[in-house]
Length: 158
Image (cartoon, rainbow, N blue to C red; front, side, top):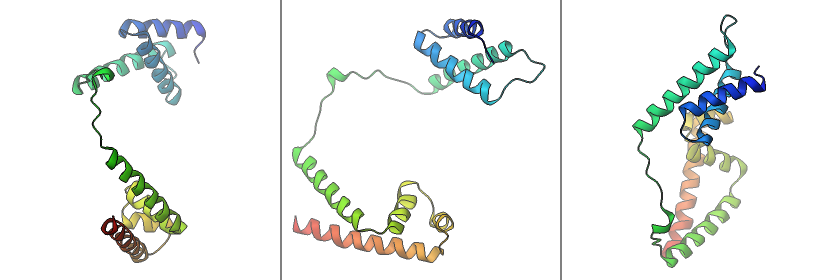
């Protein structure tokens, strides 16, 4: 699509628009991806089309940066405030969760993942797994009860 001379020309255009060399490379990369995904019509020049894509992407980035304010992160002045006891309880909770996870069936784990992690509705989970909706609701309810029993007992004992 583009020979090295064309890519150098397009890079120089990106460099003119961007302050940083790395930003220019990123802009060129994104523009080339866009040009490959949706090539220009037969009547348009490939270079002109690519330059238009670069310009539009650059303007989009400017608008995006204007909407969101970015503050530099100063790692040297970060105050770490954590309690070792809470870290220890977090590790215990993780081991408890791993134990519960290993006791679940494949179907229960899949339903839990789709429902709790991916955010699927119970209807969507039922369609995805080709199961009746009430079966999915029943499995979720049983998992909740099992977790409540297990973690309720662990908390009262600790």
